[in-house]
Image 1 (cartoon, rainbow, N blue to C red):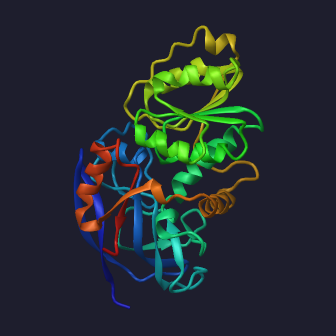
Image 2: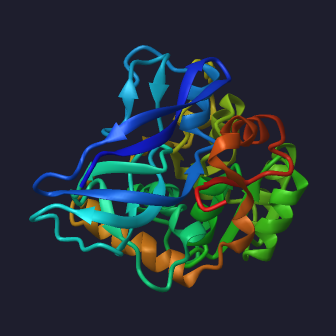
Image 3: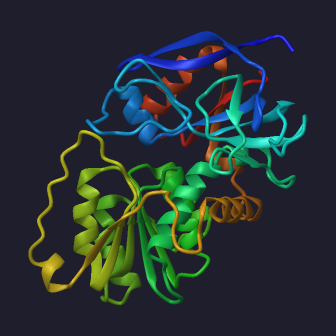
Amino acid sequence: MTDRTSHSVWFTGPRQIEVREAPVPAPGDGEIVVQATRSLISAGTEMLVYRGDTTPGDRLPPTSEGTLPFPVKYGYQTVGRVIEAGPGSGFAVGDRVFARHPHQDVFRIAALPALVAPVPAGVGDNAASLLNLTRVALTGILDVPVKTGEVAVVLGQGIVGMMCARIAGLNAGKVIVADRFAKRRELALAYGADAAVEPGEVAAAVAALSRGRGADVVYEASGAPSALQSAIEIAADRGEIVAISLYGKQDVPLRLAPEFHFRRLRITSSQATDQPRWDWVRRTEASFELLERLDTTEMISAAVPLRRAAEAYDLVDRDPENVLGVVLDYEA
């Protein structure tokens, strides 16, 4: 098989995009070549890279290329079909897969469980592109589970926050979400939240639905530095706060007294790494089961052809009020 030519998205400066060509060699042992159909832009960490808001020590995903801050080929949620399979890869031509790979129409990747997963037949390509962010949300719930009858609050209703609220709602007594955008609050209510309010109204909502006790668990998924302070203020006695967001270069000032110490609160950082009994494969399987169970149609706001990638990123960056998930469409 002769080498193929790929087209991939590179960040070359703050808010600057190039689509570059490169050859794609044939797969070796344990490798596959994938023809992408969809890839999801992450409105969290990936947009920090796009804007140039990374910090020293930030790590690149395993299949990225380049050097932070620029130039860099970045991304980690692509769906496609296997078009070549090397010996020992465990995949066959035609298999549909999710890959932790940057935005690229054709690419070679090692068929490792932490990088590639088969997509179940019941999960469409758009829904499958949500796998990584669903896994992030699930990890936050696994880090600090919400118990039956408890009040859970999710700050921020981007994709991670929305999935976090929906997963928490499978067990919690009450789920309260806060977001500054009305369309996201409306969608959260349609997906089963008990209350969806503006950030400034969350304390009153928590007081009302918890009968004054406060929130048992608060998941911070907004990326707004002020939200962590809000989480401290609304948490119940010995309540737990899960910091899912990455804040990039933003300062996160906190006033700890009196709530943090007097209420004996605990703040847990959450990252999508292995946990006891919950390795990468198990969390992937559970995330796909959630994506089969939960309708995610309205979580994809737009599909943009790869050649217009700059427009897709600008859409995510400039219009968060009307945009939730944006995918690059390689079949357009």
